[in-house]
Structures are given as C-alpha cells and as structure tokens.
Length: 200
Image (tube, rainbow, N blue to C red; front, side, top):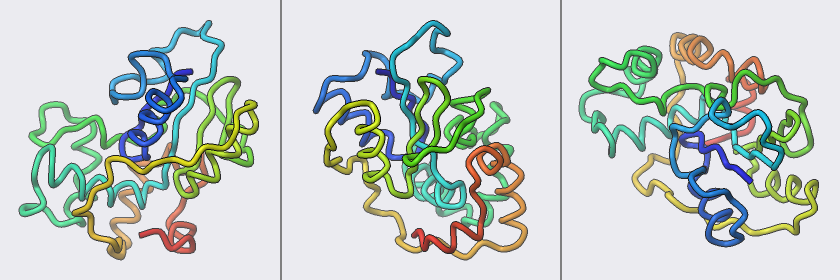
C-alpha cells in the first residue's frame, strides 16, 4: 500500500498507523508532501490511499499550523490576509512565504476523475477518504478491502489552533473558490456545506 500525504488532512495520523500499527505501507511514502500520484508507476496495482478535506476548513488549519511553525507570520498577516495571498504563495517559488503545502488537495492526485463511494471517492486502485468523518470513512474503506475496523489515534494535533473558524467574507469565499477550484469541482465542496457541517 502507498499513502499519499496531502498536507493538513490528518496524513500523519494515517501514515503512522499504516506504518507502525499495521506495517501495511510501502517504505518512502506517507511522510513527505513531495510525492504525488504522478510519481507512482502506472503499473502499480496495490492500494493507493489518501485523504481530502474541505478547503474552507483546511485553509484555516494551514493558517494556524504553518503560520506558527514553518514560516511564522501570525503576527504579520491576519487570516483574511492569508486567504488573499494563498494563491500566490502556493505557486510563486520565489516568494518568501512559498510552500507547496498550500496547493489544493487535487494537486497530489491529479489528473484523475473519481466515482463517489460510501467512504469517499475512488479511481481504480486510488482511494480517497473524507476528512470530515475520517474514522467512519476509514472503517468503511477498510471493510471494502477486507480489513477489520481500526481505531485511529490522532497525531500531530495543533494545540495552539483556535477552535472556531472565523467567518469568511464574500471576497475570501471568492478567493478560496478560485484557488481551490479543482477540489470544489471534483469533490463537491462549497462554503454552504462547510457551514452546515459546523466544522471548527
């Protein structure tokens, strides 16, 4: 099995579980953000697993995590500033705050199209879990491939993250819809469903 670690989608939780708890994961995959579906040989037949997350929730997580750790900017940029800049920061390699981690989830798994399933989405041997109900999604996926349910242990939790996501302005919603259009198109995420789920 190969796990593609998309940033801020509970990847550390899944990767550590697959490697340490069950020893199901191939070496070299799951602990770097540099490996995408495009790096996996076309003739690879075993399971490829990943997790996708609503961009309106994921961006808030990015702001709290990377703004505090990797390239500290929480004292310089507000969340609204971050959203307005994330398009450039994800693409302009010369920018001071550039990180590949700011790209849409779809960047790591393109150019695939997906069929929606009970646990998430699937394309041949590539399976995508829903972050929004991760434990349930993971258990249903495991059952579909003949594995018993397994209680995930949350890892890499940001204790400093503010619990409540700020309200998005119309301009922020427009920016997210633009930068993360591939996630919205392929996985059906939108701001209205984000609010309805009450994610914080």
